[in-house]
Image (cartoon, rainbow, N blue to C red; front, side, top):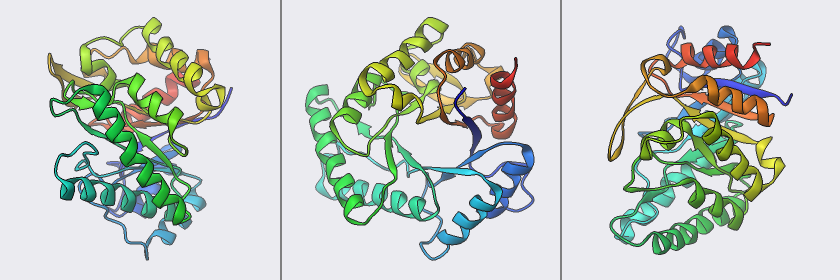
Length: 275
């Protein structure tokens, strides 16, 4: 079976310090394998300090990923907001890359009442610019648009996979809570298998070896995601999700975004590794 790593969205609650290096050491001490750098409010690591983070992760054998700031909308109407969105994504990607992170996940944007096809073309155009700038800077990080949790947000699975087909250095971030909250579906083994089958069909078997997954319990309304819950508090059928991972023999990283980040990450790892 391919290696599937499990980790936390940010510094574990059990960490003895509040700095990133302490978080990395805590991840390894817990028996987990990965940690996501949470740049959701701002990029809180400087380029000067990034090599220290990379060294800490390499020493602990912890894989790093990154979540870019929430304030990104690649379909923004105002030029200033659009340029600021790209700058935030590029900065997060560049700093994460210097830290040794393998991928940067982000929410691509909102429909804003515009037709989905027009929004798709605009998001694609902006993402091509982002990737071109990253390549020019020698930044080879995987750029990962995330499946989103509200119907007002761009980021259905088919849209994300299409972007990955059409732009180099772009791969999906599959967020199971978001996909479930978006329409109340995607909560059975059949549907979970359909998600992975779609990834394989559109991007090939290699994509299944290079997955970036986010998971948490989720509270939602008819408009989509409201807030995260622990897995046991939610109706998300997480044991069947893990079963589908095993059936498809996927590799990559699973990041717990639960309010109990390390507890749920450890639970998922135990279920996955259970004979």
